[in-house]
Length: 292
Image (cartoon, rainbow, N blue to C red; front, top):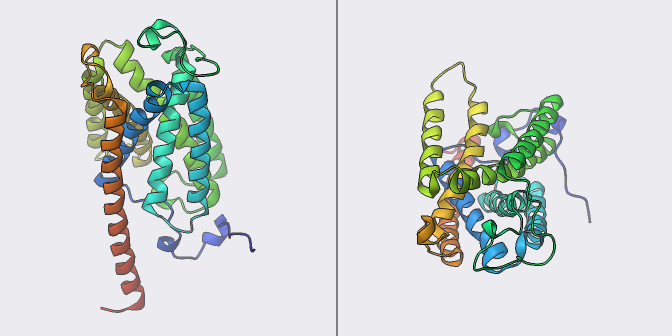
């Protein structure tokens, strides 16, 4: 059986970008789906680790393996497919949730419910705390960006068409989603803002970023990556707001019910994106063949 073709930078030169495009256009629909996926990642991660009491350690291993599987499918795909792309985003969000919890939390009563003394099998958590965990993740994300910069490959999502650039993109996505979880949990649990207050703060910062898009001196690529990180704590605080008890400022909808509703919403959005992609492909084919 022949090996699948892996596109290199030289393979891309002189070819049609649309055929090779692996990542979506950044539109309003993109950000709506990103927030939906990250919110689901928060509720689903908590469902496995806390509600089903598998613990952060086992859940992190399981969800990271799921991330690897979905990533392989995405990387082997020859062109952009909404279901493949958003499944990887969802898996990075779920894995990022439990990776962050495992890094930052421990077995103290502050992080356990119903008088539990432990949560699942294995280590209960490293107990680094949100500031230390965030510092480590920010450093790791900067290292990825430095390596990315040294390769000379583009940071612009619409121009990522090679295997190396996409691999770096997904590495940055996994770390940024884990970082965003730490930021969201800090805002919800430790800042005093609560779930709704944390979500409002992040929404306000995102609104500022939208305004900065009209400032020529600020590169849109920089704004994209800042917004990508910040939509994760927005999803984290929104997820906590949906699932946490009323006494803690949440709506107490539960992780299972909230995850089911959010999954249905995300699947609906992915279906819509798939239909739009097919329409765009048909229009592109018509233009290339010269058929009116």
